[in-house]
Amino acid sequence: MINIFKSMVVLVIIAAILSISVFINQNAEIQVNFIQKPVQYTQISYNTIKGDHSIEKWYQRYYQKKGIHFIEHGGHTYILISAGQRPTGGYMLLLNDMRHISAGAVYVTAKVNHPSTNRRVTQALTYPHLLIKTDDPCVIRVEGCINEAENGTQT
Image (cartoon, rainbow, N blue to C red):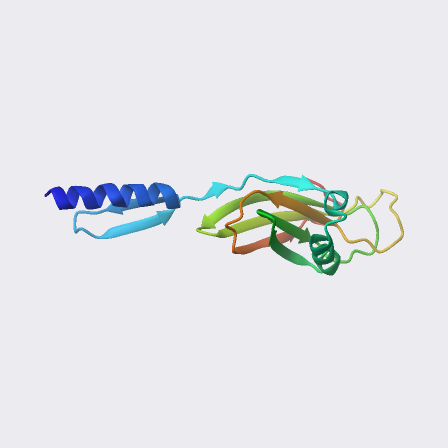
């Protein structure tokens, strides 16, 4: 009986460390669920990384490529969310949510707002993107989606 109690205490401690919930049903079957929690982050600008050649090189390589890119550097994880090439100015990329979905994995959702149809915009190719910095060095995978708002709508 004491060994079972010790095992349960160890299981609870491990669950707390990994941010998981553990449920044991009447048939002694164990169900484990990861508790999704928001990622603490700071949105930064290119000027923040300017001068750090490895991060700057990574940024230059990916800011024009549509997708969600990340790199770990100096105890921080940098996440670059890019909407890809757009025909004019006026596009805005917004971060909707960023949360841990499992140990070492982060899921990002972002939205591209299009310029209003009656708004004057820069007539040049643009590359809307967001650069995010988190102090979480344990990120090994970043996934997500970038949704498009309907033309002329902003939320």
